[in-house]
Length: 287
Image (cartoon, rainbow, N blue to C red; front, side):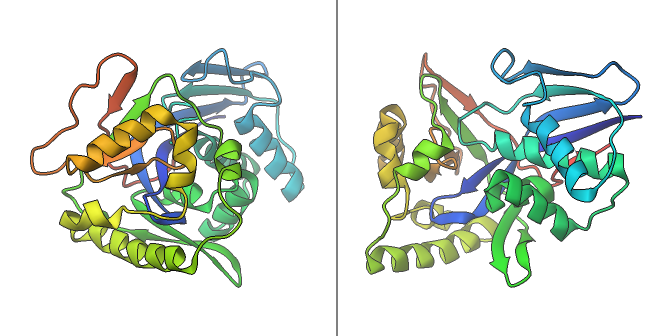
């Protein structure tokens, strides 16, 4: 049996939507399981030489974890990872790995888990419901915790959105470090500000993109993380001052910019990479 999952990159938070909003992008990792090949793990593309090629690989660990949870038995298999999502750049590479592993295990075991259960399992493993939801569902995802567990709603992004991801090559940021930078409490006014901006962001991303410059404003997390990524902070300020809608991509260090009205992010020279993917509206696919 040979199975391949395509799992897209995701940008979480989208400014004020901390841990609840995320957008899927048409940059993807592909994970292939082959039960007729000698057991092994191989990584090519982004993360080659850095990511483990053994049982500690995150995709492999996810597959074996779900098998244990479901009480199933896996045949020996070769796992091949062809990665296009940059690592530690706020683009959901770990969510893609976990989602890929969950979908592969579900098919290998014949479990046929329902969509909400796949979301719950992947979120429990990866920790970011917004990234996981967008990776699974595609488009713009709104994740929330209900009495029955994690749930997600898929929203239709405006067709005129033109995302650009600006990546500082010299800066990386571990999610754990970005989380530690956050305060334990916030002023009530800042929390209320973000509630309003999150609602505005949903409207801007789906129907009123002209509102994006204000809708992406945040007082919950970005200002606390920028000291860890000074190059990204300087560029963020420059882009905002020139009128671009911009926010941190996830916890950073990449920036998500929406190019509008024929204006594009200029070439930034050495040390910067700019991706201009389409929005992925399909989510993770298994074939």
